[in-house]
Image (tube, rainbow, N blue to C red; front, top):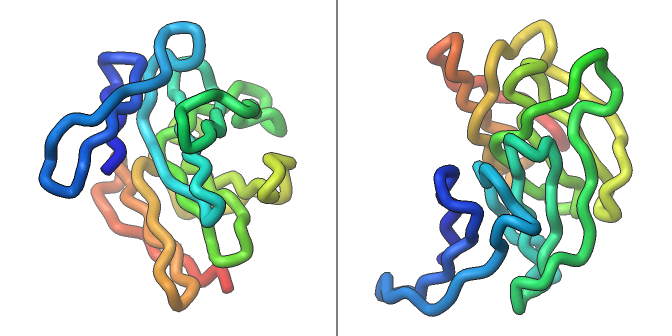
Length: 148
C-alpha cells in the first residue's frame, strides 16, 4: 500500500497487514503530494499540488521524470488526483482550473476536458468498463464521464 501525506513530502509504503516498510520522496522531489497511482509497469505516479507537477518514480522510489500540469492555461495547474486507464493514459484532476488533463504514457499532454462540468475536481478513479469517476469538492458531487 502506498500513502501520500500532503503535510509531509514523502510516499510511505506499507505491507498488506499495514506495517510500515519504507518511505521515499523528500523535499528535493515532493512538497505537497496529493494523489498517487501505480502504472502497469509498477512505476508510481505522484501528483504534487504545490510544485504543480506529476513525478514518476520507479519501484525503488527513485524519481524518473516529472511533468508540469496546467501548461495550456493562463495559470498553472494544481494537480490533486490521478489515475491510469487501460491504454496507459494518465488522467490528472486540476483543482484550480476545474478540469481533467490527459497525458500519454510518456507524460506528453494530449487533451483536457470537464471545464464546463467541473469546479474543483479532487480524487479520480477509472473503472474497468472505461468510466471516469471524479469527486468535485466545490459542487459536492460525484461526476462520471465515459472515456473508452
